[in-house]
Length: 220
Ligand SMILES: [Fe+2]
Image (tube, rainbow, N blue to C red):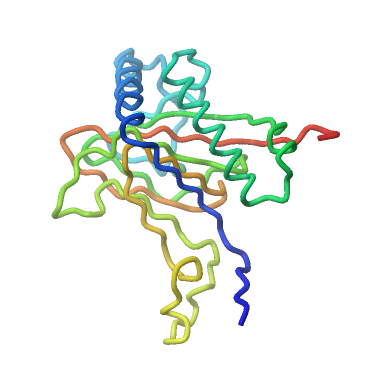
């Protein structure tokens, strides 16, 4: 029996080793808190109906800030996006290396009560999240700050008898639940709807997120 995966949604995941992630995340957090403390200078002023509560969203240009820690993160994301695309596309290694990436990267600092309703990331092909600090874990509230990705097959659960509701792994219906871990990088298609459950904690939850538009130059 051959099982064919039709319409599968690829999500990439890479966990940076702790010895590398810890100092990088510390440096990034320091930069991000400093920028936030400058008031509106680095704050994104776009109103978003899906953002509620205590969330600071930066401008979408953080890879242009020319700081060694941000450059390290930018290189890390670019390198792993190439590896990801090399695995899931028909592009050959030379073509992967010649891809032009147009990143729109930002960061979020979420404090107690901050949340984001369901949304996708329009006008890009691939998006991602790099966790700097997942914030405080509260045992009695396991969904605090958790990301839920929603199945884009809107009718996939129209009839859930025992032949369908027990599907496993990539064939399952419903949601994919992601608990952030410092140093973990995720890639997902920008069309994929997701939401961030309300975060409850005394410390800040900090992530970098990005959208990316990708072009293969002619004759590549
Ligand atoms: Fe998002």
